[in-house]
Length: 107
Ligand SMILES: [Mg+2]
Image (tube, rainbow, N blue to C red):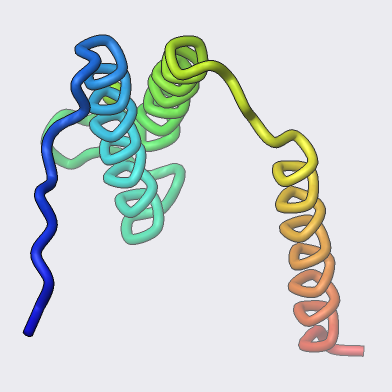
């Protein structure tokens, strides 16, 4: 039998809204990231003509702001070491991708 747990919304209204806004802005960032993937970073929204790159930077700014607010209201416990490890991993992956691409080049 599946266990059921009584879940209730975050009770602190400020924390509730900061969490919600962060999620909303993260989803807006995800939307433009996927548009850049499928249309190209330097393409434009066919409906509005807005460049994807411009929309991407707007949503990055929105997410940065929302996360900064969230960090302020939930007592910042940002793990700089974890972020550094993650960034170093991405940079190592980039070097691997670049090396792999060079292998495909004509000699
Ligand atoms: Mg936004």
